Image (cartoon, rainbow, N blue to C red):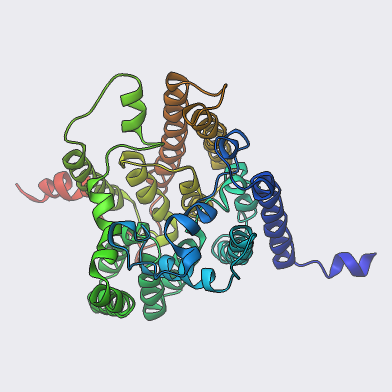
Length: 412
């Protein structure tokens, strides 16, 4: 018995936790898997997934190229589209092709989740287990293909904090070519390198990232430009959608006009606020510490806040944690996410024709609760970082307030 326990390493425990989370997520999906993903059944049992839905809706079951159908092309960046198309080719046509397509994809997603948890463990061994214990994460693992982009994003952060610029830049380009969210990390990356006076590294990082992104995207841009552009056009033109503060307000009777312009202005405001926050820190932060705050802020002001977006936020939140004092705020946020995960499916059940479900007002209020708990967790992290004592000389820098007001003391 002692030999068995002595052979159990932290890495093995992390893998076991990831496997258990994947199995729980599979169990949650199994009702729909055995009943053909019928509506409103998928919402009543909270087991909806884009994977079987888009298999036939985008012609993948007929082995159509993911970007060949113009407006009916897949609504994702290139690597996600290639994964959707390639896995469709691995599935034999027949009665159970949709279920087999789902099974193949969730198997790959489970492997990616294990990989993501292992990278999270490398970045923050003390709190990495939280990723596998999050109820909303477990419930969202197989909704979409997000983990393909999340895994490469976490690797990019890992290599950046190890100062392996080329690897990080290449992996960030891969992640941006999979899901577009990781492009937001460019801002803190440039800031951190600038604070370190590594201007050449900024040029190198940008060059490698752009070169790899072009290598991945140009073949599709040249051959099927309309299909490639469909994802970007959809996001530029879409109105407020599920999970967003704007959609919640509209359900409560407060409609916001010119939302696309407001979204652009808010994105600029969030970016400016992030720069001010970074300047206020008493030391140059690690990328792992600031990634969560930026992505969470952008999602909160964005036009859509899907339930699976929690998959992007929790790994970043976990690697940002530094003390037990922040754990309570983390779990308050996770409670908000878990409540919302139930709320969205019960609301969609009512919308799609079920005899029971969550009405508009209830869903809108729980959407705002979700956002409020996230804001609370963000506030706790920011307060703790801003209150840190200045480190040893060499890693510290002047805060923006010191720059604006402290310099006056040098004048007579």
